[in-house]
Length: 484
Image (cartoon, rainbow, N blue to C red):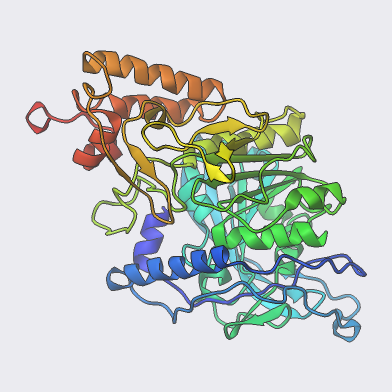
């Protein structure tokens, strides 16, 4: 579990690389860092600092910024000697348990070689079926986030979600800034290429080199690879979109899933032929989605979704209650159910050609987000048709305030919502869940959990239960009659 790792491993030292992996002769100018991205990274660093009193320190912390120059000059004299290839070292193997009847193991080793700008030696971690034939043929590559490492695996999608479906997950160090190195305890790691940043180095090209190595030296661990995807959130989404922009992800990744990202325009890259895969982006309301809203420029390869009311960092709900995680009880609004649904839709898009639902956006007027009578943002699809929001947002149970860390106010009771009884409320809530599921914004298992949480503590609503009975809400256990 991510939370066990976070408790015992704690924060790490930060390192950044940012040489964009690109075909020889291509030099596309990349987006420069904006104030929103720098602010996000600074806030993540503050979150890290907030956790420091309860976590053992494993290294110095630094506040990362996006590099001003992302493409390092190529030096032909620095190319690999003849016969030298990137290499995955023999790993240590750790059992992970069984997921949906599939036994998984974790492989930890070192990936070393040379990108177009310099040598590297970085940790890698692969989670795969103990019997490679049990995989679904899909490898999901994740560059680690500088604070929480492999957060898409361990927090947002989750091990159970991926592993019971047979996915292989593969992470690799791509920077020497913090947890981007993946495991700072591994001795002798270094990155000589890419660019310098805050005393460390960043080399995006390691990510694509690693993905390619899985087809050769990694076959004994991952089995037959039919598809390769890449994902990352916030800080770890940026190297993905830089690689797409530079043309380096073409022919390597079939699907890119950047999460809570901003500042890029991947539709222009698709139109220019710099990436031949598909892109599915999921953002919170708090993220600056100006360049990401679906313009219809690449309908057969691009989808963008935004979740009204959700913050940049949602409450993950599964953090142990004795760990003072800063976003606990901040808001029940989350983009995670939509993310899980859209990830699987992207998977089917690649495998079967079946397209995901139409992209969504927040309704705006004269550049300002349009809100309902309660104060919540209204969601529409790219054609301007209003679409379902999270059920408790749609019912107006509170005003859900987005931000780096979210909040809520003006919580309303069943009677204030206009229902004669909790039974009537629960029926209406279930109808909203059905609409959200019919729109394909939530999976059946997440929809079932949402309905159960709305009925845990009559006469309280979903949001009141989150506020007043958080322990029961997280565990999905009914409140005792005396506690209501």
